[in-house]
Image (cartoon, rainbow, N blue to C red; front, side, top):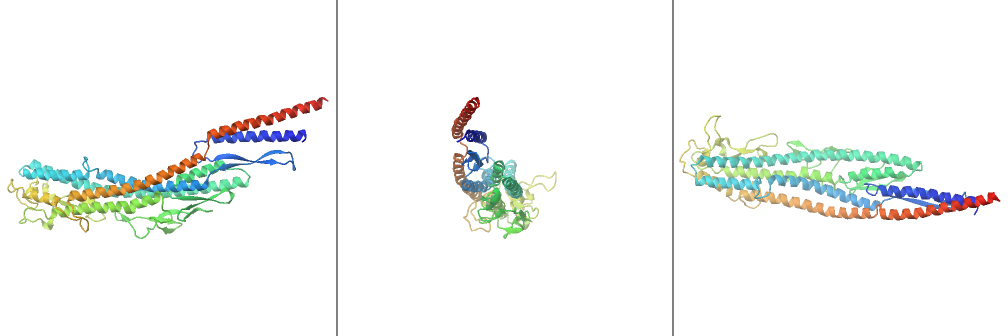
Amino acid sequence: MTLNSAISSALSGLAMASRATMTIASNVANATTDGYGRRELELVARDGSGGSPGVRVVTENRLVDLGLLNQRRQTDAGMGEAQARSQALSAIERIVGIPGTPGALSTRVADFSAALTEAASRPDSLARLDTVLREAEGLAGDIATLGRDIQSARDDADTGIRAAVDRLNTGLEEVQRLNRLIQREVAMGQAPNGLIDQRQRVIDELADLVPLREVPRPGGQVGLFTENGAILLDGRVARVELGQATVPSFTLDGVELQGLTIDGRSVQTGPGGPLSGGRIEGLFAVRDVLLPAAQDQVDLLARDLVARFEQADADPATPVPGGEGLFVFAGGPVGGPDRAQHLAITSLVYPAAPGDESRVWRLRTGLGGLVPGEVGDGRGLDALTRALESLGSLPGSAGPARDFAGHVADFGAGLGRTRDAAETQGATVGARNMALRDVEASGAVDTDAEMQRLLVIERLYAANARVLTAADEMMQRLLAI
């Protein structure tokens, strides 16, 4: 080996050590950066046949386990779906309340029952009759509020779907833009690792919406597919939009709700659909399945309450026109008058006009009563109590016979079971997600290992510098001869 060859080899070693130091520094600096893939230099030896011997840096490789990454993204989507379900159900469950706590629907029923019992013991007390009316108003108001809140939650879910679809489309466009930049860098012989990191972060941000699978494509590009085979990005970006609803269609306050389309083609939004398995499916389930089922149950509770008191009049001799009871449906907007949100108290117990005397005594005598009657007669209050506590199935239902408090308890328990199932699913997927993230972290930047590599590079740098020093001394001696 000539001195020139030795100097060339040592210089290439110094250049390699400098580049390796930069790579290690980048790894350590980004040890906690989301989406960062650990870098490692790819080296080859120069044999000297076409030039000087030494070492050559081929490229800086970005080390990421794509299979593991795809698995983790599937669990991200599963967590997004479970969270959408459990959050909506928890919100409704909080409105219904925990049995026995102040403000709970079951507590309101118990307070109404207690007010009836107290009034029946002193039917002459207008104050106690007023308490019965206030508790009845509270019960009707709580059920009506619950019905409205469920409809509002469905509207929120619909808004959430629109926001999620917009985020998905925007993210796919950004991935496509980064694909083009990466392809250009690769064509120029560059290593676009920073752009690839950025692309991974964008895809990770979309992973909770739908279960994405990343597939490598030529030129450093990637394609994105869902677990059920929908092509979201593969050379071109698919357009996901809200469009014609799939069968069966659903309505919200009489307005037909939209379903999903991919490139103008209507697709299923439930389990097994091309975009199923993520937050978008969870929001559709909330809007079109879970909350409508809860609304149906609340409507049945309201209808049961109305039906129970229609036959509770104490005086058959003075029937109420139309068989109206204490609780009525006051009508409302599109969607039918017999909805929970339209539940109210009959006007027969209120003053006929401002300034008139209260007609709360009709709780005692019967709603069709024309005069207060015997103040000590509590048959009307007893009839109201029997109506509340009588056993029966919900209207149009073949379910078990319960008193009204039992039906309310069944409704709350059903909500709890559905929410528990969603939370259990979320916890299971979350545990798997955490395990996969731990495996990801074990293959990411290890600062201790990077420091060990830096020590090796430092020794290599010193050795190559020593070679240059020795070659310089030899050259000086040759020149001195």
